[in-house]
Length: 456
Image (cartoon, rainbow, N blue to C red):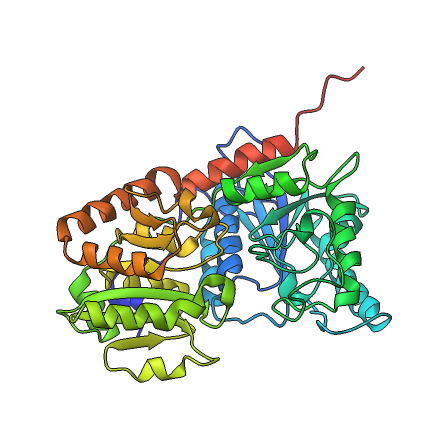
């Protein structure tokens, strides 16, 4: 079934009054020059960081810029069709997709060097073809591409920036170091978790850490853009003398993500119409930093305390949680396309997160756009969007017991749930819309391309 047709709503807005052109986009009402921008990431427009990249591309296209994406050719195509259509519907010029070869995570030199050089040659070809003004690197670890690419790309004569969807650009390997602070001084073979995702051979960690030093310190460091105030603080602690660390909050299309009729949404998803539906999402429920070790504890507690609760699980349950999909009070879906998410949120009464590591929290943003209240641990950057007492209840002690008590309280207080949901919708419309994100990027481009002084 197709939710776009079923809900009789457009998935992405088509801005009117402009036409596409062959070159770098249509005339723009922005006072800033139009730019050609190439994003580089590992997962294309899939997974969390890929969806964030897709939305950043949409906001830049919406402002009339030209935008392309170089990504791993091993990335899942699950979101590609809808994203491509959205890019073509926006005023700017979509420059295309440029697949690059991923690198085997356990490859060693000289094979490692050959694989990485082959992929970089593909990137250099894309850069030569579209001649971007700016190349923005985001997540690289899913394809095992090296951070030295940032400096090598700059040598091609193009401006370069890094966007931190997680802390990979700060460490020698990991995206979420949690309590480990070795990355502040040196990551090396004593890393406590080299075999966790993303895997890195221990004896290569010090070199990988040094690549970050080379890129982000010295007299002309690569600019760093972040997704939250918490991430910004982490980056500044890692690179205290860096002159260009700016926070650009993520946003979304708040017409695509909008509240739908709850009864009809539940009908589309075959959910019980009279139950209290608690939504829980994760890309992989086996990934520890996202708090997934607490999944069974939270679900058992919900079942015991709320006899009318029905759990809606979205994500991959492989790795020991497969039996949950067989429970008669649980509905499970995996590989859900982005355009289905407004329907899923609208079918729910409450969105619950127990992640231990969030640099922003896009799903909390999506829930709020659909007027669904959020209960979450106050983990990292999530508090920028899940604001305690406004659109969410955030839990400081990271206790499953406190989380379950909070869910029970909101279960019993419908007016409070609805007030939190309405406030979340206002918050997104005012501060996290595509237009707001477009303006943040316009301001950032002005900082990355300062006006040249008068000729001598």
